[in-house]
Image 1 (tube, protein in one colour):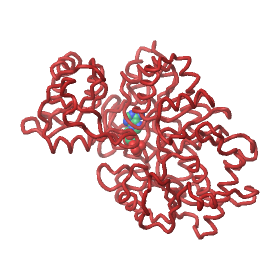
Image 2 (cartoon, helix red, strand yellow):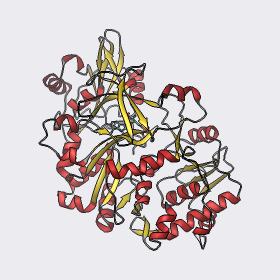
Image 3 (cartoon, rainbow, N blue to C red):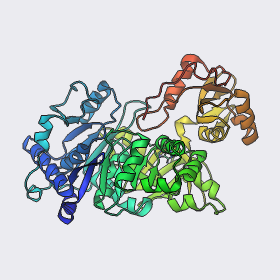
Image 4 (cartoon, rainbow, N blue to C red):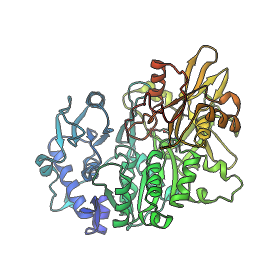
Length: 527
Ligand code: AMP
């Protein structure tokens, strides 16, 4: 794919570092070819693993395509992981070389044959372009060969290596054009979310289309910087977790930007990876206009599960619009989707059960973990661990991860439903609901609330709001006002951390006023 672009448009700028041109397609190919050749010469053989423990960086792209050029398997690592966690992954994956950025990997990581700082003179030599990229052979790979060994976040135990094949990535790339967004050569993708996750592999459809790739100079998420980049380079497309979308929307509101100005900065914002609450997407559409598409997927079927199209989000006159914008959309083209019980038997339409996905985007299995593979993949169906239901038109509404379900007084309560209601209460900025052990009820619903700056929120007011909008038994029994919710690097609220916090402190009620709003803030890991 890279050679195809290097042939078609060798002189077109392909990669930007901030607003600075970093590489043309010809240069990108020449650098990836060079690095591939050097990796090969150093004895790395097809199928060997190369670790990438970096903040977002233009060399991320050159490295990915160098590794694939040489038939290697990329092991992308979340830049926020602790060195010991990374060493566990190095050992599990038996990764040979590791490429790092220095603020992410301050120390030498045990287990690597060679650790390269991509901003060092050593890296400059490795990435120095060959004169003729076309003369460097591309290692032939089978569609079933692993290309991307993605480690799960490991919130329920040791992380597992998800084996994503060449076919999985090709499927994801092509599907983007059908189910997410068409891409033209003068479009640009900006890497705001970590490239070790879905945001990084969205480079594939944008490379397929010969589009431009922009890495923010900050290497992270700065709303003002992203708007500025969009205005300077082209309306940008990006993948953003809901927390990032909210930050963009807040910035647009605070800076007084109209829909027109937002349209000049952003072409398409693809959101997913965690629940997007109805109140938030409505506000995003109002402030930034119809530039959103939702996707639902997971590491095991990366970026490909369902999609809620721009047109569906915009179609406010549809009789089921309210349900649709609360859903994650319909199955993406290459997959089938069904709702089943724990044994994998189909459940009737509208019934809540586990989401099962089958198709060419679904992983080959977990790395050296046949037991976990057998549990997750049965007859080709991926048991996602997500709980939801399908409507007659094929729209999937997610309830929660099965492990986040709260069972109180014998009734199932889906935290997401409660969160959706809490977010419509005046003064509430963020809400996360978990179950806490409770002698009387089995589990009690506890809500963690982040209050909007300057707002006043009381437990009594929240309770009255819940009583007005949902069944009594679903109401939180306790409220905890916190300064921020703990989130991982990919923007997911860490419910495990909230449950641990409750186990340590107990769920006792707190008067929910701004004055005592931050007695015990849950520390955010930030995105
Ligand atoms: P990961 O493997 O880290 O990408 O996490 C995947 C999980 O994130 C899924 O199994 C879902 O629980 C959640 N998720 C992904 N996309 C969405 C979405 N659009 N809405 C709600 N939850 C989502």
